[in-house]
Image 1 (cartoon, one colour):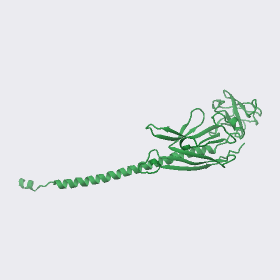
Image 2: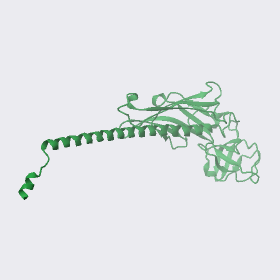
Image 3: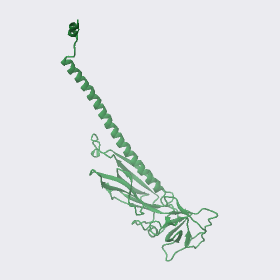
Image 4: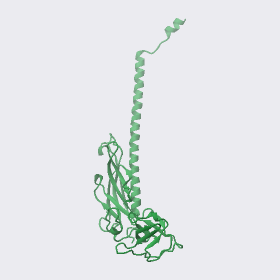
Length: 290
């Protein structure tokens, strides 16, 4: 009985095993190919998403600060007032340098009170005063934080800082310190004091850790800390004034061009790098304010 059962038991033949193995290999190869394709598609989409985010973030910050250009800045003798950043201002609080940096990218410098009030007037001040008391004198100096705007309308240059007392000059183009034009009663109103900054935007070409070329849009507040990264993989920025001649009413950024962090071997343009271009026209409302 047992001998008969054993004789009737059958296993897989070698041909059946080979066919089964071939089918399994085909299925695995198909699944692997699908996985690799999906992974490549995912990585490409991640690269494109990162590129779009970098370009939009950089443009948003620049556009927002350029929109505030001119606020708190005098409209005359700008080269005398704005003199600490190595930039020569003409008739406008905007300077555009053409064709320098990576790929001939432009550089733009803008001046204004970008951060709101730094402090407030601590005691009353009268017309003609050349000193004022503020809530925090550490916010000011006689170089990079010397241009101030009082109450949103009166400009002055800080020529001395002693604790919370500032010595000011409302007309640095003439000899001696000129005093305040207006009087301020701090019991009646809050008198804000803001600091004018000069902010510079440029594209910097550097060598990455793996020896590759890296392009970064950088922002410099010209306070001694140097250029700080704002957006990565921004390869070009072209800036023109609006209108093209005469007093500047605004600026056009066209393009702000970003590229993917890594090349796509299946993309046959721009050495495999995908690119994205943004255009923006910014018209600051404070450019004509005296």
